[in-house]
Length: 547
Image 1 (tube, rainbow, N blue to C red):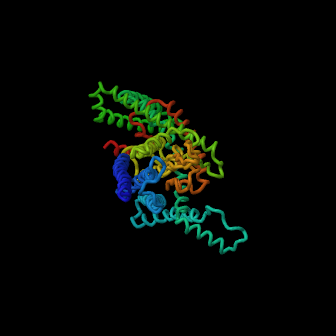
Image 2 (image 1 turned 120 degrees about the horizontal axis):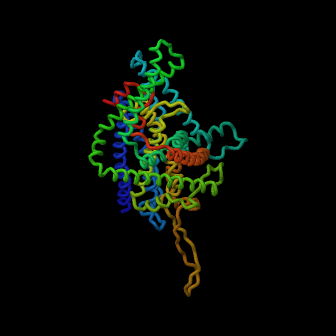
Image 3 (image 1 turned 30 degrees about the vertical axis):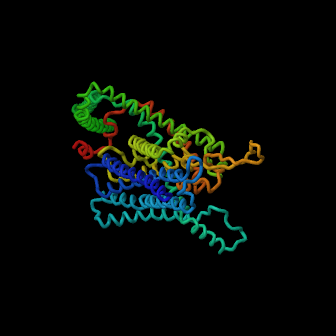
């Protein structure tokens, strides 16, 4: 009976995970194909981008499975279920999840340090017309070796950084070396992998602060404000073209009078001609947008246009409320750490929650009714992806003050797509810690409770003490064999200094979101062809979009 119960609940958890896996693969394919350039699309870069994004999302989907399995080992009264009463059985289940994390995190390291860099540099070298395939592969491998060296260094640092007190100074050199190898062997490589993933998560934190924080404000506010009228934009663009052409004619009329143009006038003429080209490309895009079938359907269904706008406004209001809920939950979590943790030296780690966190309470309430919490975590992850993409699309991919690439539907180069997936991969990787910050109790123990036996004097005629059982929510004070910590938590908090950096990163995220919210509120309605026409676009890229 116990074996049958174990099998049924394990099958349920992994069945939901498989279903989510299929949804993730379909989403990644549609997502990448939407932004992929039609002219420069390549099979290898497309497959790489889809797989990299899918692996990141699958890793996040494993978190609810981890929490579900540790939670369903117990009854609501705090006792273990029959199939989980054996320590060996519980260990096998935990090892299954641990091996899942090992596999996915190892694949992420492979993607970040080997696969994506190789494909990226391969297509960078392809831009040279005189380069043959063999030279492309050699140069791509040469650059990729640098990334591989960084990966090996991170793994070695993580493997040999002691997590326990080292031997005394009186110990021999051999004892110290033996201690390091025992540390490496006893951990089975967990610290090495955890250190490497935490280092990548640190980069993901910077991307979250830069792109996700801004995207969380710009996405809902764009839905609320809507877009400008296509007809009005075309009229305005036509007037601008006439004005620029008139200024060009005035400058050229000086040449007809026999007067040479000054250097300043020549510079102004070049600027005006460049501006005229941009305006004409803009006019072609607006014409296409006006002829678009969606626009025609919208005109035919004009009576329903107001209802569609209302739906967008409601959706935007919902998204902004979700963003504010996340911000409040993150603020309460950070405040809890500031007030009740041991400080920097402990990584601001708090076991349990001392302040009421709305998102944490919601997840704890939904967790017993599986898969509601799974659905909510998946929605949170996808929300982070959508808001991150909104931030990247509005800002572009930057390296400090230099913009490297623009992300636009059907016009994104293969290199930009690989950069996009690398950033999204790192962002989703950091999502695990963000979810912990939003709901620490849920990520650590799920809905586990433990039973506390206490004795009270008997009220009956016979003297003596009666034993009573009281259930409590799992926290740091619980006996070690009564509450099982999720494998995800162990990965996130193996090194205290990373937790400290994440803590300050959360404050930076809150500040960036508030600044982005103010900036988004001050901006007007976006154009219906927002981001499609830039001054540095070529006619080739424009023709690609038109056709």
